[in-house]
Figure 1 (cartoon, helix red, strand yellow):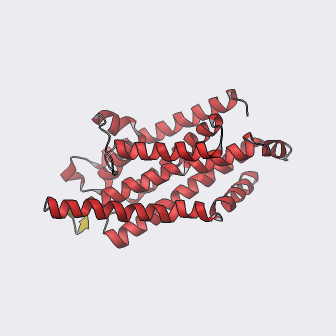
Figure 2 (cartoon, rainbow, N blue to C red; figure 1 turned 120 degrees about the vertical axis):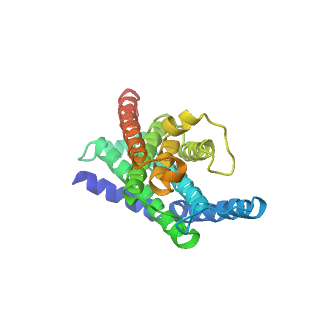
Figure 3 (tube, helix red, strand yellow; figure 1 turned 180 degrees about the vertical axis):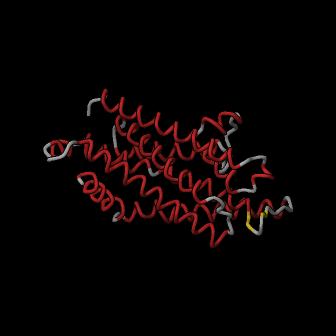
Length: 256
């Protein structure tokens, strides 16, 4: 019950701030329109190519999924900011006097950040489906990927918050990591050359894209099977558990 109360408290903070709502909903859509306009026009006019599968646009599907994952990764800033403000700033003395342990606020922050990541995913996929003709494919895989990537981002956000000197640093680093990962898998405006194995099996966003491609983007044409999707999900589960353990160890050893 206490965790539900803290989650409601953090959700109210996250969903009533106009800037936060813009980050969750409006900015991803703006980036999608810009990314699709640039890349689709290049592919169709310069290369004379279209990418269709059962009437769906595979090029748009890939771009929308990458942008979705990028903004889900940014949601880690929520948990990080909540932890920094409430457990590392002057507020920590007030919360230490609360009738619930500090861990209750941590769980509430993680749940809230995960929910905001899921909201972003639902909104981005809806825009992609109705405006850009993307192929959704296996919704179970999409749900699993969304939750796991969002959880990962919360743990990373908390780790950043435990070392950051300001709220701005948490947001900046979280956004920077998201852009870096998106560039390393070759799905954003700038592509950073990355070894195939590292991209497919180590980099969380790369593993997620592999799972999504294996479950949504004509697997037989891309050399994937349904089993590849679930193996990739298993790798993400293991990575999430490792990050959770690392967060717990760092939080215990680093004083507020």
